Image (cartoon, rainbow, N blue to C red):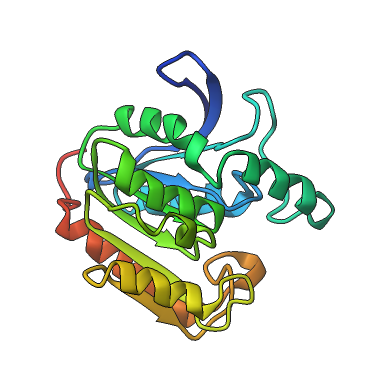
Length: 225
């Protein structure tokens, strides 16, 4: 359903993205922010699925070069160290925010964002620093705790796994203490419970339901295509 598109930030830096158009009455725009592995088949499939539900979706490559192909696999263990180093260089999403802002501006409102792992931290930063969003849902963002002093400007929900070896529960508690007004959901799952490599069906379904309810409250109701 979706297609590869080319975009550029305000300062002219090019990047690529996956773009999926709604197939029914439009609910709004949605920016999907990938995990450390990039715009994987899973991210593209999720984009297409949510387009079927009425969202116009853009899933940008957050740190890859504009001419880099999208991954053929959902994980590439041999590339993990390299990908993690690239993610660290961006401040775990901080320097990717111009790309996120470009995607927001490319979509008619209301515009929402969701992100996973690396993209979960990026989504948290976008909620605090980007303009034009109406709601954000961040899944297992391992470095959100480093930015716990950021204050979201829009309704935001966070989702974590209770048995996630990458995100200590103490970090989750720190985030909850810093933001007692935000919904911070814990699931009986590990890391990446929405993705194929860590999928936990009950947790994934509940987290996505809560996410879509958040978006609906932010104006993501069906309208004309």
